[in-house]
Length: 329
Ligand code: ADP
Ligand code: MG
Image (cartoon, rainbow, N blue to C red):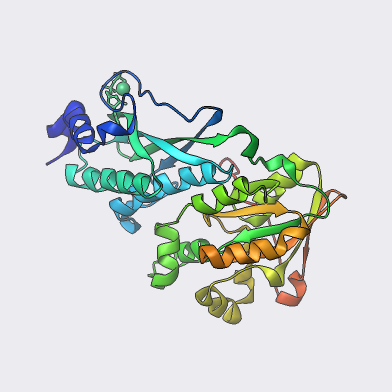
């Protein structure tokens, strides 16, 4: 069945029926959702757009995975401030020609992924789009006011840490752009990123992270945001960048690919700055969470970001990070 046959209100009714009515004071079906957040906590809100042909290609994308990814990348922003995600809102622009089954898969992905983080789809908007599929996902979460972690809290001498492994998603995208199927280990890092909510919460709750950001545009760009917000500089050591086995193997054959660990995109790992005295605690946390946590450099008082070891690794860094409106792409 095409969306044109089911119609806007038919689709909304299906979305409502699949929801959990106990997740909010008011969920889907009124003019607004209404939710209660724990007393004394701050409400966090973040929005991301995903547009067909810009952020994803339908030919490369399973709609269930797309629904999951749309939520995960959004929830990642809540994780980066130390928060707990609570509500997801989905703005959906779709062609009347889209098969309802595809949208159902997408919606199932949105719903399942939200629930994986303890959140629920509580509203949205649905409208016609001429051709391309457009998704606008908003997440709301909460964090105890005293635990909020911003980009601006870094201090000179802090260690710069990153979770997980870098570059896999961008490497998978390279394969796809060449018309090749990426190895499955890195393909899933591109199609199904995982937001580091638990890590973000623990870093905030235990007072370990002074500044934090999620790595969506590559370490150089995102650490750059932290440095500017904190009015400081930093140094990153290329040889310390955490890489997966698959990524390492690729870099051995093509050293320049290491660039993807610095300026690739869509890693959705957390980058955070901590006092050096917490190193042992962080390494123990890595074991506790079964997640790599790696110190990759240090915050300095002199401005600028220095990348050490590029030449030895055989990497040259050309242009800047990704800019949606730059013409030199
Ligand atoms: P309004 O005209 O007040 O915007 P709508 O008819 O658009 O109301 O929406 C009715 C209800 O359905 C609202 O609770 C809205 O949040 C929800 N809703 C609409 N589209 C979506 C969607 N794509 N995903 C989740 N909820 C939706
Ligand atoms: Mg509406």
